[in-house]
Image 1 (cartoon, rainbow, N blue to C red):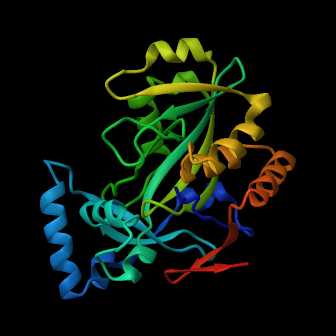
Image 2 (image 1 turned 135 degrees about the horizontal axis):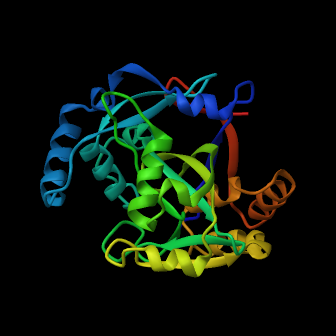
Length: 276
C-alpha cells in the first residue's frame, strides 16, 4: 500500500462556487501528448479491458490560476492510466501519468442523526473493498461543458436514492488531486434530512456494496486512522477532510502529516502542479 500525496488546488482570490460553476474549456486534448508507441500500448490495453465499457469524453484539469481550465480526454485514456499507474513497471511514457487529471466529483454526505456516510467500494472495480466518498463518479463532458453539481446530484440519486428535496445543502469544498488513479476531483459537502437508517433503505444493493456510518464526533480520528492504514482511498480522505470546519480541518491535516502523509497546496500552471 502506498499512501499517496494529496494536492489541493487553491483559488484564494476567487469564490470556489463561482470557479466550479464556470470551468473554461481550452483547445487541445490529452491525446496530443501520446507518441506512436504510447498510442499502440493504449490501443492494446484498452482492447483487453473494454468489455463493452462506455468510451465517452471527460475533462482533464489543466490550469487553476484564477479559474478552473481543462482540456479534453477520452475515457479510454483515463481507464488505461488508472489500470497501469500502480504497476512496478509502467508501460507508458512517464509524463502521461503526471498529465492525467480526468474530471470527477465526490461528496461527503451528513445525515440528520449526525453521521458521515462512507461507502465501501465493490469487488470488481479499482480499489476494491476500500472506503471512499459517500458517492462519487467520473464527470463526463456534456455538450463540451463540465456541470459538476448537476452530475453529482444525479450520482447521489442513482447511488443513494436521494432526490433534490431530500437535500438541505450541497456546496463545493475543494478541487484536489489524490494520487493513485489518474483523476482529479471536485468535492462537495451535502446534508440530508434523512437519518442513516432511512438512507440505507433507499440504496440499490446492486449499485452500492456497503454504507458505513461514522459519528461526526469521531470524524477526525476516523480520517487519520483509516487513511494512514490504507483502508480509505485518497479521494475519500480529501473529500471528508474538506468537509470539516476550519479548526478541525487544520488539526486533521497536521495529524495526517505526522503519520507521513504528504499534503500540498498550490495551483496548476499549464499542466504542471506548482506548490506554494
